[in-house]
Image (cartoon, one colour):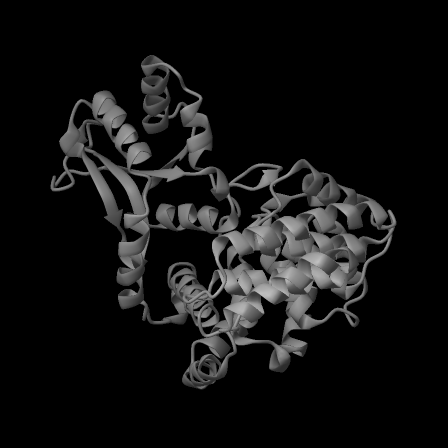
Length: 409
């Protein structure tokens, strides 16, 4: 399916797959789902959308059957089927949610389970503190048994979901030791992700900064990208994480004088992100902002900050509290209005994901007050009066709780 060029052979394989799909085991579902995931990211596809849809449907039915057969205590079997579903993008269902919650009943843990659970929680945006705390406890109590790769996956999951474990200080200390122990076996991406995660929690050791931002590491990273297997995706992921880490270290650890070397990358990526903005959502917020402020000139749209953060709207106020143009010489207060979508939030326990909380924290470093608009809240406001009141409270909050973002450095 991935690399075949013979259409007749592909059709024969798909026919055989359909005939024998009832023999698939959990591991088979995972392997085929991974192939479908790779196929989705290939520029040239030999299989039709209908064929892929049919294979997905067969795997979905087989997954439902296997879940009924898997023993309640077989968490490895469950996690394998769940991971397969995530790879196929087939996880937005009550069944998957119920299975994720069932991991609370785990009475044992292993390094492999830590990796699987971290992957599942991150990719389904599922913040279930009880499960994450069980994983972090395993790292603390079995430090010698956990692989550095798996420890990094758990750490990055905590960052992605913006969750500080209850045993955080000890966990961060031990996970740093594990990553340093296994760093020669870690990929460049894993090491960068661990550093970004620690930066978010304000636990990044100076040794990580010195080790990453030097010529030797960058040359090693270039060599890894040159020889990597998945040249369509892996280099992009590495560059994106390296940029985010470079920005975070420049802003939060200026004492190390790390240079900013991603301006060109940011400019290229900014064009794509602005182009993909939901125009109607953006337009309606702009309309209501103009009505509330009664001075459209005080609203700046699609502002790009130093280090490349995109802000949907910036509202400027002078020392008297009046809205003024961004060209004014008297700007005493700047409010950054950010628009967020449902997928920017975690599920179960709902709050903004880590990278967006870090963005808000960095905008506060720049001197902005940050006002967040949740799309789910916005569409539930049915009347213009409600929306005007919502925007007014956003710009002039009664308390400062709207902009407080933890953890602060």
